[in-house]
Amino acid sequence: MKRSLPDLCMNSILNQKGLALMKVTTVLILLMVLITPLLYSLPVLGAIRLQTTISSLGRPPADARFFPKSVIIDTNVSRIAYVVQKDTHFHIVEGDQIGPGFNAVGKDTPIFNPDGSRIAYTAKDGLRWYVVIDGRKSAGFDAVSVPVFSTEGSRVAFIGQEEDKQAVVVDGKKGTYYDGIVQKLNSPVFNRTADKMAYVALKKKKMQLVVNGKAGPLYDAISPPKFSPDGSRLAYAAKEGDTWRIVLDGSPQAPFEATGVYGFSTDGSRFVYSVKTAEGCKMIEGSQHGPLFDGIGPPMFSHDSKRLAYMGLKNKKVTMVIDGTHGEFYGNVGYLSCSPDSKHVTYTAKDDEREFLVVDGKKTPVYEAVTVPIYSPDSQHMLYTARTEGKWFTVRDGVKSAAFDMITIPQFSPDSQRVAYMAKRGEKWHLVVNGSEGKAYDGLAIPSFSPDSKHIACLAMKQGIWFVTVDDQEDDNWLVGGVKGAKLVWDASSKLHTLAIRGPGIEFIRMDVELVE
Image (cartoon, rainbow, N blue to C red; front, side):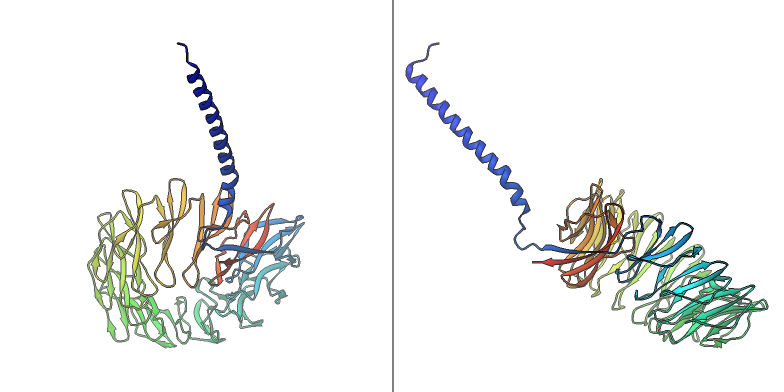
């Protein structure tokens, strides 16, 4: 069919407009391609920026064999130490400082003291063993134990052996030699205030407790000594002939067929212990005797020391005894948690292969599995994780969250208003905060709230690369990984630090991250 001249002219005009429109569209697409990355790189209005400072803590010497399992860090997450071997000698390395060489470094050392200010390890030089504390060697022995620091870190003790005799060395001073020091019985041990130190010694096939160098009575056997949390009191069980008795603050209590578990309240004012009689097992506090059971679990006191809970076994069923009264018997009971204000007690229980919680005596709905109950710092909220049909979710104040393939133990923020946990769906992990899922990652680790509860940080991993993320803002310093045991430590509400490993190879670093508004 022939077209008229007007038709041809109109077609030409349309073609020209179409070409112009295509050119404009192409330009717009090119502009979007160029501008979109810039838009993504611009900070979101109101979002924080991460300003990171890296400090090197050294690399394992290139000419030495590095033992990764020996790496330790202090509780402040500021110091790191490990063992290396150069030729035939072993050295302790801290930062970029390599210590003297020895024929061997003892198992389970080095160690830091609780506040991270001191370091100790055992080492063999020739035929003698030494304890090296802050770079200074002790006297030599045929064998030495791993040193023990006091809670506040100022004092240190270890066992030294000469031939077939052993002595405890405290702050460099050697004590009396005995036939043996029973290390597996929590010996030696300091009290909280570090003004007392106790250990169990062997003498002529008998045992005696030694406190601050003074030996107590000889018994056929002694249990591990236990100081009260405030450090003022001391208890242990002792066997004499066919009977056992508790020795409390140096005073022997009534004898029984056997003694079991024992413990102090938080403030040290109360002490309870279990005993076995011909009628059964019972818990004793002073002159008060609890109900009889076939077996009794460890005592657990509330934060204010006013409440006491323990498990009781009878006819293959288990109950929880709270404030002297036992509840219903179940197939098993497990984790117990007391609210910070000590008003509420919750524990997990199991019956007929179904698990649930008992909250102040009342049962929750049943699930395939439940985990440890957690109270908020203000005691107003309680949450736990549970599983149904293979999926995990949290239950906060009775309200269920979304379900995931896996959930880590959740945590409350310091102000009790936020809850965070790591959750896995498929192959990806999300940081979930108050029910809101964060970005998807190949891995997550050690989430931590800021002191003011406004921010949450964690380590995240994508395609084998680790980095710090805060409130979903990713730090651009790529890491080989974190150091085992290294938490994210908040130095202020807008500053945190951690220890990590940076490539290439292995370089230990400290990362200080500041949140900039």
